[in-house]
Figure (cartoon, each protein chain N blue to C red):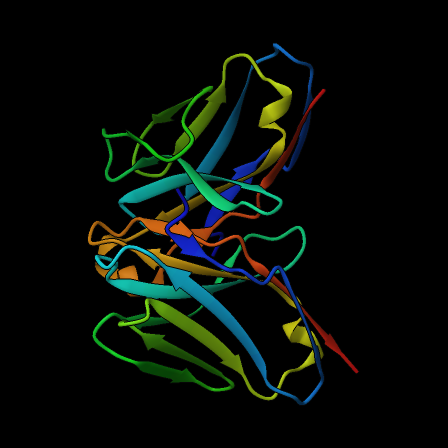
Length: 114
Length: 111
């Protein structure tokens, strides 16, 4: 049972380069999320998709775009990477009917922008 | 504007003793409160939750207490074990199921 799968696990980008972080879940969850984790800041929501076909901004959306490709997949794109986007990125999914169990997270993508 | 705050970045506790982690929130509309545990190089994993209509929930060695009037919750781990060394995140869910997280508390359990 894979749960939430993120690729790649590590990435180094030069300032100005673009890349897409991939996320897929096999739990038939409706909702998917992208968070970034920075020291002293906890997990901050970048974008989320409450259901297939919808996406909404979270707390820190600037510099990112997302695509909910289908029910399973939710990708995060950095069009022009900046050093401030150096972070660990987590994808998560949830079934709204089980909010008391929270989200299932992937293992993260560690991104460094130089 | 952080609505969920964990003011202690770290906690050191002896094996066998109680660990108490604290969390404060500002939004009275939060429906559920959750604790997540995170090991290095892994994603956070769900630990325990509590509904806003309850004041205590227990699961084995883990107990979460909620004081709605003070907008405060705490996680008690008794007894603490070396495998409990991790970062613990407090989170709060709004009625749409979106989670807001605190900054985390690094727990170190010493022999």
